[in-house]
Length: 440
Image (tube, rainbow, N blue to C red; front, side, top):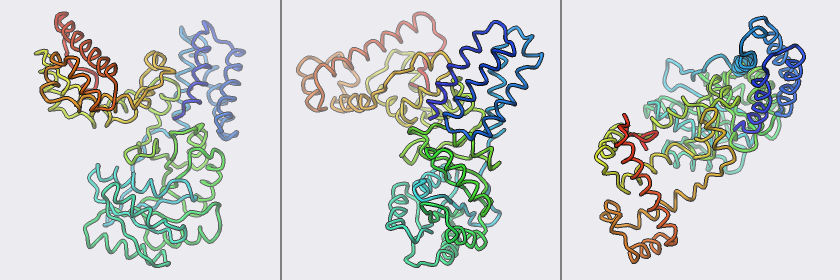
């Protein structure tokens, strides 16, 4: 996510930080490079022009030019303006005082509304809501069946009818929600391959009838300027409340995220960063600006860790580490918790500054974790607790049972032995904490 944009920004900012003294000339040169970076990322040219003008005006101030570290000052200005461009603060979801509170998803066909309905339902349920998915797309073949499958996948009820009257279907869905004590209805509306009057009229009628507390415009993060133009058209007709950017895990250049907020003056509320239903993130402008500028996103990383790690288990693990009783069973449990936090490549991208550079270019083999789990699962409980008993014949049996090689089993055991030695060394050196990062 934003990887290409971040890498290009990093190159420009490195030059700025290296300047012992800033002048109007080298500031102007840096601004031209940043403008090129923004345009290549598909940021709207008017927005890019205004962004550069704002940064340049602040950079030429006396507090920067006479600063001891002028390059760092300019980086701070770019961070501030980037955060302002994406929104000053987080934007919460709006809920109505009556039940059910209605969230209406709108956007073009293929933008990912149906999948988002499941992701959003799962997200809201974790926040204590009791959602219902509503199939309001009566045109696309298999749209209703797709929502039914999504509902089953996230274990959230879906309201599906055979009728063609979308407004009547939505009304009956809200009545169903009230009767079944479901406090949030997520309306998956129909999209088209392009904007047309019939679609807009239908959405306007649905809005007037069910009075949603929240209308979210769903934009494909890979469509660039097309997403901006579409957002403006939907805003004129529906006056939506916020934006959700989907498909931000692929080759999205990031320009849509920077442009839509400025063009519509509506906040980005969520970003979808993968195909799995748990890969929906609340959008934080300050954290995203930090991530784009290569400063990492430690807060989001810690939040992911807190969601994945159970405090009681972490305390038990720390006690075991102090007693030097860390076993392969504990190691396996920690792997499970890391997997809950999401793809390792995404976690590494949240590391700040020098740590990000250290891991840059590292290709994380997610399948390696699967092979490690298979090896540990092929051991008996006694072997996991006492790996020193694993002789040649046992290792051969484990390799056959896990579908791996004896060499891979040996590699895992050698790595585990190194971890145990590391903890012993930490204890001898009087380390204050025996915890591994994120409970690992």
